[in-house]
Image (cartoon, rainbow, N blue to C red; front, side, top):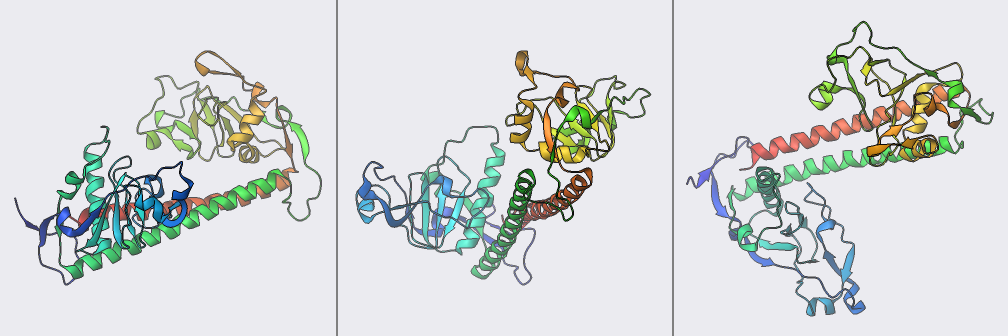
Length: 402
């Protein structure tokens, strides 16, 4: 076996080969863990952090926030041990693949093995082991991994560069993770803003200047038009079939799902255009009566779906905005829908319009919707940034570490 290797991508100035080592050779001490008796109040609510598998965040090696603390008495009367700061906490049972750098002293459950007094840079070691475990998890994907023994973990073969290169690599990935965390926070804040915005709309506490009239209760069948435009002349092909997703909205089926699920005859498929309202009539876990979505692209959808168009009284995308919320759509649809065998939804296109909703004037509906789309675009922007950074991290881990 070649005991010296080099990664594909390196920082300038580093040319020496990386040396082969066993993981166990990189730490002076190892610590196991345990769970103090939960029924003994004298063991809990102390000052010593006690971490469990759920405290570690998948794909993150920093940012552990312990939720439970134990007392010195608990340490004295259980298998858990106090691990010094700057150790590496590695999950070896349920949750294999998660690990974290611990900047403070701590204790753990029996699901962990901790490496302390590391002879290598702790950040570098964390990313090196994270990459190795993730590669192994991908290799055995589909099989059940119940855990990894201490001996198996410590005998793993890794390749290590000189100390300065370790520190450079560890600092680089730590900075990249900080950037990922920053964009995750921005995304989370924007999603919270969207939720607050919708709550203010639904409660009618948010109004645009010049609009003071109370929202009017309307039956949807009186303010929306059923669209029966079909693909009769086969103007659209299977390449134009649209999938309707709760998360992604209206997307090309082949691009989104990898292939078309349409039958040979698509002449009866319904034509959709941007601004149409679509009701899927397909039950989902949190949407037992199906979902509503606004069409953002032109194409054709399953003839089982209902398609509706705006009128001079109601703007269809505003209805989609109101009913995209699973709770709102379930509350609206539950009195209208009857469930058939195998959980099928029995409701006509017209029947789905038999419910009532409250609406402001159509001019204000359009203003609300414009602001809503701007927030959505910001969410999409931050999500793409986040996804790109995560993809970059994967590529760099693959090429900068062995």
